[in-house]
Image (spheres, rainbow, N blue to C red):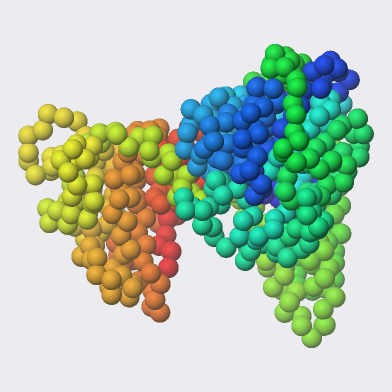
Length: 625
């Protein structure tokens, strides 16, 4: 349990939610011995290495006879090849897995697949798939705390399921009792550092060019022996992954593992050229093995819908609240002197282990890793030359501020989910296509000229009449007689002043606010000088379509307006955002914010039609310069 605070926090929150949903957990091995003939069914572990492109035909040929598991970003190449895997595996607990899976773009395809993962997998990622199977990961705070409630020894914990998703799959299927593993695209290395993954995957564009410079972001100069060649390049994470797979195979001598990947050599895995692969198992036997996995190897927690209540009864939130207050008071009372900081280090350690011994709160599980790091950091600062005493004050202030932020946010939202995103624009593109045909009725308010200026910047409005049908604008504020009801109010304020927002939030209809700047300039010079905003003209149009699929019914939407930085703050624009400091609760969706009409936000309202998970904020809105 050495992970940092956020990892422990989100791991516990995600695990609690997935168990509440009734997803099945891997049971103890003694309760699920696999029949011999089912254990002989071949298992294809499909990674996203460069050699996957050359392996797709073999995977397709034996798809009905072997259990096919796609690992992480290998899902997109399989979808493009028309191959539906039996399982898809993910290991990361942050929300980037949701983005990568959404980028496949075929949501019906995803609903044909069962997701396999460790506890801590993001609940939003789970929602994309047909079903979910979970294995506990040894040593995680989320695992140790869960087994305190569930009972130790009832569910198996994987010991070699890191650092990559391929490690999870190899470890899991060895533990399940399968004896024939085939590694396809599990390269863990590459010959050309510009061809580091399958060219059909999300790392490349349609022309096969990198979306970003992989070599610059990863140290790819390490060399290891190759599977089919003397040497290949790799990075540190892949080298560790190779070592852990070797340890897993050494721990399961009964497993025959064939490495068909043109990457790193893996001890314990026999190199096998695809031309010499021969699968003889029957399709019927494979189906029986799949049935065994779902019915025997995994099971739901008893009375799973009440698991969160059981968890809170064991790890009491009120006790944690008291301990956090003690910790914060202890830190706040510390002075920037060697003696005082030395005492703080010892008192923090005592408080942490006292909480662990009573086992009535999550303090130890949440803070063990971060507290050890902080104490080590403070100890290091204590050893600096006494002439640099100011370093003590700086270090202590950093810890005070960090702890205040952590405690404040956690106490307000102890069960919130991670909101990390990866390639969010690509994910949003996939999601918006699902609702692109929606007809959106807008009731536009504001200065007539500003309305006209705004509409002329929207490509969809300048397009053909057929395209316009999807974006009907109702000019009700001009006194026109309209029979139709608008989906949203779009308010373009004459002077950009959003101070009236508080009066609009309580309206019965959702209102979208746009600051009407003195000129919606498209002049490049004005934009580069920070005078005119970088105007995303399609944002509101896409936003309207997105909101039709979201669960917002009331409140106010404010689209974010961005300026290019220059030497002077954008003082002229602060007036447009006056009054927003009265708003003390909102949800940040990245490109816009939603100010709800009520204090209570339902869980389903935190995800919009872009597939973006909003982040609740409990402090006043402000203009960020």
